[in-house]
Length: 466
Image (cartoon, rainbow, N blue to C red):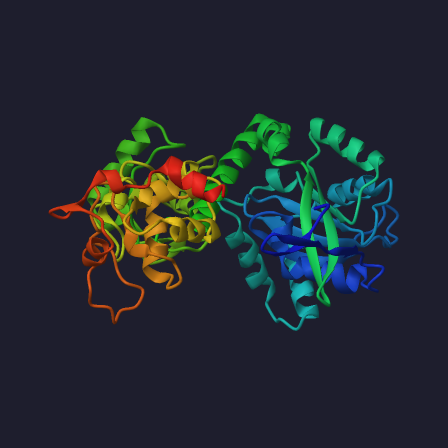
């Protein structure tokens, strides 16, 4: 982020950039603590295992003096090695990160559990070795895989990177070494310090064509990591977009990762207890499914693996569990437009995530559009969703609860009717949205608005563009 401004209408005032050293902020006491407190800067679903780790020894038995800044574990089962520099990174910082990655690649579950216990103990948290071990196992979406553990991902965080580092990291990535470069910036805003973390390599465009798992040596490891990564990404997209309300009922159809013969076995097993085929969605990125069969929480892949093992007696790897579950659109959650809800039918969680990839719970654009819908005009949930890059369902949910949305009554269903799920944010209101619209000059044929008054997606986009 090269330029940052404070904005007041048409006036944009530059914000002065500063640095950690200039503000007397240190790597260990400050930058490291920020990363530990907010591990999302390292990627999705990273659990910090330890920091300042130095309990390894040279081949002659003499303890090494090198300290690994931060060691994490992501939900796919890979270790994350983090190297921190408060200023410009050293020219050989990538070599240091590779060395640490090589050292931790030999760690097993017990070594990591011991390191995690020591880390928590140093921070006043008492958790036994068995509890630490289980915490690590629970964090991984699927079976614990020593194969993936041996292929750590590296993250280097610094204020800037010399060309020697960026050129080397690009080449190392092409050779199968997975390294992220994250730039940390610091600004002074109205007397406060603001820190920002920006991933400068690989960019999303690079990841699209040279996805890290595709560079991992060995076809089995590639497939396993890709499947887990796709499942985790789908869950994060759905939660981030707010598509599914808590309590949404999901139906199971075994798909990815199992042959037809085992699918038939699963269907027969479900017939013995129909609760095995249903789950309840919660907006928890780690374990969003509550299985009706036992009331326990699972990740989609974790539950698919559990079902596979329950039926076959064998363990499996490579299932993308988000393909197994789809929305039961026969049950419409409170406050949801039934017409919008039916559009979710027939799509599994992976497909739904693809539909809304990029959507976020930032409703600034939506509020701008709503404020621009003039008296006597109306629009639809779907038109708004298309204009702001969301879906009709979270648009409707937001309108019913926001309390600050301009003119929510001017949003109708695709058929031009007031949604049966429409609710005034102010529960004390007793007038109807239809009567308000009629009073504003919208013509109705029965309960259907005149199509000529509809503000469509292309017109909304013009409003958004100013």
